[in-house]
Length: 526
Image 1 (cartoon, rainbow, N blue to C red):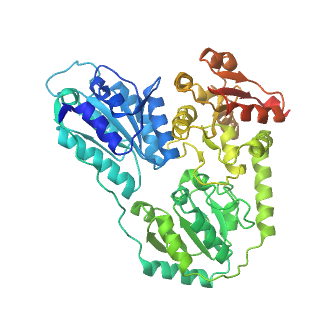
Image 2 (cartoon, one colour):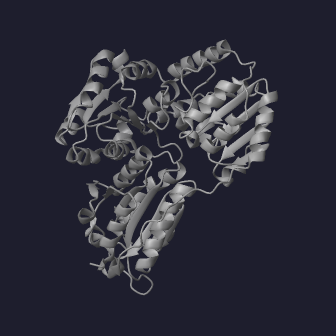
Image 3 (tube, rainbow, N blue to C red):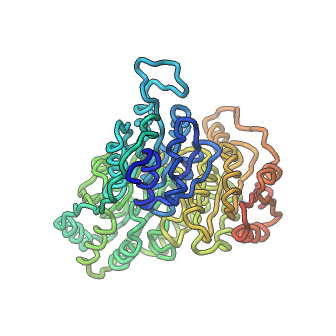
């Protein structure tokens, strides 16, 4: 058939562009989008809430490197997905949300799911939001989204399709295009940076999540220059954690600014140097700062950038490595180790007991495990002390800072890497935002551990109130019996009594046919 309903044509179009999984919830308004999913050979994961669908698409995209796709309905469905849309936007994740929309809203009021401006509402939390008024427009918008995912900074896109249009007959979508990036690297700037490095005695690199595909190149440059390095939370794994001159993911330690102030050249690659990277306004440098990023907006931000290089990390670092010769530096392994030891103790003092649990789990976890964490004290500690061997293997809702991310994102990640170890890390409060997605994980037969840190309160907020001399208020909530709740959804559930038992249960969970909730409390370490 050359013609079929547009919803079916879109499903076939997405399949032709490499989409194997769609996350979503069908409804009366977007039912036509579901007509061709199975026929196209796409797996659909039924979320329990549109927020879960969006986070699943996010987790799938971060894991696979391919766009995550979510289908949602008009009005409340799109509104429910806006939180994960904002999260994917802030963390540079390629997520495409396709929603239905009403055919006409100006003269006809009181319709089901009606909004004043659905397209505009979505635009506030994503790169762009557009309505497709024709089949050709729908195809062009989808191809535009996929093209920009490949050639620019990947961020959430939203396309809405009118109900009647989705069910109307349409010709097939055009053949997939071949997308290739545009070469933007200025070789003269690479030479400038190489010259600066040659004369630097204490060069310092900062690698962010934008350098996760350039780990080999980053390590080669560090080896030649004997430079010290920091990584952002998203950049963990870019640098070999055994490198004696790496400070790891400790930029948020206040005194890291004192260390950075001793550098005579700082090169930041693939990082916004944002508030959630530094937890302060300034990096702390007193020397020239080189910024390398694919996003021009980053190059013109509040930080004092002396050299701006518009390039992806891999191209820049490969070109830089080719111009470098081996050199010594004034950095010493002993000074790096001393700072890291001090900062580790600070972390342990701020949130007692969690470091020991992280150490026990890290020792036991498979080398290729991938982690999805929520906004919880356990993750805040883990991101600092849990060194990663591989880049892009720990995913956290950094920029938007949403609760409820970990479980659905882990489901999306597990769908993208079946047979490989996936780990969910959540806190007792945030877990309840999306706990219903346990049902989706059981349906899909996904075996992974859910490490639930249960301190029976919003401890981070309580600590913040105490520091502000505010009597703690609204920080203690009645919790369910998490083990019973997980079992009610068909999951396995255990509460280990020791660190060794915790590690054993986590490993066992990878071989199960469904998730295993592992409850951890402060009592685990006394």
